[in-house]
Amino acid sequence: TIAFLNGEYLPLSEARISPMDRGFLFGDGIYEVIPTYAGQPVGLSGHLTRLANGLSAIEIENPFDNVQWKAIVLELAGKNADFIESKNIGVYFHVSRGTDAKRHHAYASNISPTVFAFAFEIPPPQPEAKGDVKGFKVALEEDKRWQRCHIKSTSLLGNVMHYQTGVKAGVDETILFNQQGLITEASSCNVFMVKNGIITTPPLNNELLPGITRQIAIEAFKRAQLPVEEDWFSKEALLEADEVWLTSSSKEVAPVIEVGGHIIGEGNAGRMWEKAIKAYHAYKFIA
Ligand code: PLP
Image (cartoon, rainbow, N blue to C red; front, side, top):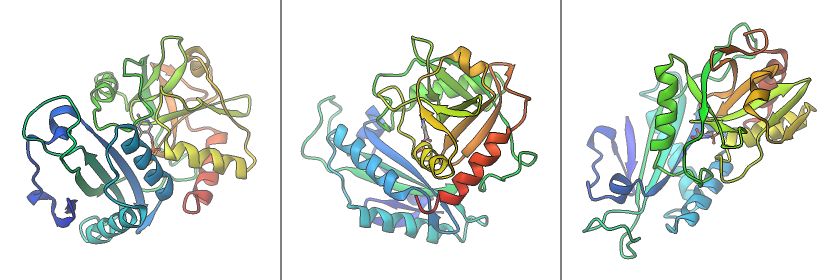
């Protein structure tokens, strides 16, 4: 497949960066993943705004404007369409602070960011019938990450360790709760639940990533007149929910059928999920 590194397109197998890159040594960088289907990106402006916000939060100058970033997304999706038959293509962006002569913690001022991007296959769009969709099983544990989870940092060790809890339990993801027992998000997704016909997702703060799929989904539900609220809910409320969903760029809106060994609802995708995924598909390309 074809990648992008510091202004050039090249085969991914030929891309090289220095081991002195601060992205490698410190995880000092910001990343994004943008889904595209048959060349059409979803949520591009939201992803580029979040990238700009993350770079600004860690004081890295944004190396490109949105027109340039958009061109990279479309170029990589186009160039890799020959390699990825399904044309369901995720584009990954990674901006690190750059390569320094020495390893020292202080931000270096005289280095320029390393910009890397590549394309990879993502799952097809979710089906709209509950009989056709994969129901996710997830683990549940206390969120042990840092207090800046709103920044899409390339330092993902906390997330990786939480994800691995799920892998070890033989499930697909891990949902997290904070010290107050309130749900924050999952290790690589946002979380929604449905109770008595009301859809709820935690509000944005420093404890969770402002997911672009989450935002598109909220707007799509409002347009479809599905009742949706941003509010905290406890892990106990999650276990008693009628439905639980995960959202992310690659999963879209995905039903969860089991949390920590506890069956959710009737153990399959729910009726509200069917309405939700239809609303999401109807809106995702215009968001
Ligand atoms: N939360 C975390 C921790 C993530 O890594 C991700 C990204 O995949 C999400 C939520 C979902 O964000 P998005 O919908 O922008 O993909």
